[in-house]
Image 1 (cartoon, rainbow, N blue to C red):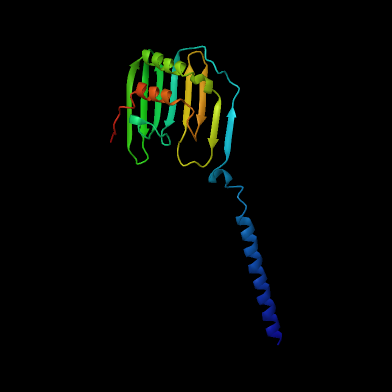
Image 2: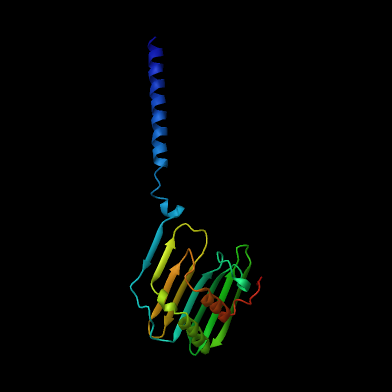
Length: 192
């Protein structure tokens, strides 16, 4: 009889331990503080207090990333992500561009241009008043791909324009088209 009582006591202690452990792990499973940023939905949005007008008209470096994945009317530009880069040095401009589609198709190009490339680029920037976006920053964590736009322009005077949104585009579609065409990326076909 003594052994039966001890066995029942040990069995009930084991059952309590298992139930307590399951209860503890369930409550821990509902706590998501460490994964909130990974799972998405965390939004950071700000407008930095920076100049919205640029005095200089001499661009020394230009970087822009444009996603047309979610844009309906893109005509011949395709639903692509474009990267456009230009850097002026010693009277010449190194121009690079690349694009990619969701299905894995890619294209890219690189060439050297005269300084008037930057002057024409500045005409596009000024015509669409891209400086008004300076200081704009919007980020949504957890997005699977680039759906927005990023703009980073540096001038000889030290002035700059920087704006970034990984969720949606902020540049006028006409400016987007003119930039892509100016870099020659619109006519580029798939490169192997």
